[in-house]
Amino acid sequence: MRKTKSPFKDNKLLKQQIQEFLSSHRATFAQEVNRTSCFFELAVFNDLVRYYETNGYLVSPQNLRKKNRQFVYALSPSAKPENCSYFLAEKRYIRRDSKYFEIRHNLRIQSAHNDDIFVSPDYAIIDGKKIRSTKVPHYYNGKADYFYIESKHVRTFAETKHYYPSPELVLNFVGLVNEIMPPLIEGNVPSQLPRHFGPSLFVSGVGNVHINKIKKSLAERYKINVFLGLFAYPSQLYSSSNQPRIEKIGNK
Image (cartoon, rainbow, N blue to C red; front, side):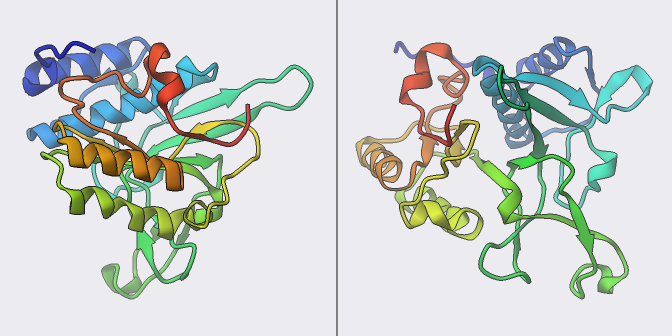
């Protein structure tokens, strides 16, 4: 693969690409973000949607603001899901019922090990209509709804990091996998329909030889994807030609 100059280093061009993606789904982008890391996070969300399109899912934006069909990204885990947009991914079958999943941004996930622990990866692919709310003492003194989803309803998830990767930062991703999908750590790969990409870490910077060895080891052990150099190679997740190299879980 030949390395080319990345458009993602220019925030204006990145914003334009986000707008173009939403326009292809008859939606608009109206939120204000300034940091490159924020644009990167939104771009990768769109890449997740493209992955499902590449793999035969029907996708459609949901919960758009009526004014100009604005798509509202969840820019913080504190954002109420009812106020945010998301994508619905539908997998159709000839002889069995369709499967539906929500592609969500910045959603809290309850730990698989402890009901009082919550984590917030950047993205989660979840079963539909499973978001719950509770009251927790550390969140507005227990007076506001605390929205989350139980880990058992998470099909896969992903995280972005805008940095030049180090071994420690890449390996820390394993901790999230352990909290959300511990069977993968134990070597038990989900087998239910349909197929999703394995838990994934998206890194803007290009790694060195050592980082690539870690990437390969995590893929072999836990079905984890580590996508390096997203600024240089932005289509790694959804490119049709790259699908055989992506770790996947579940069945077709």
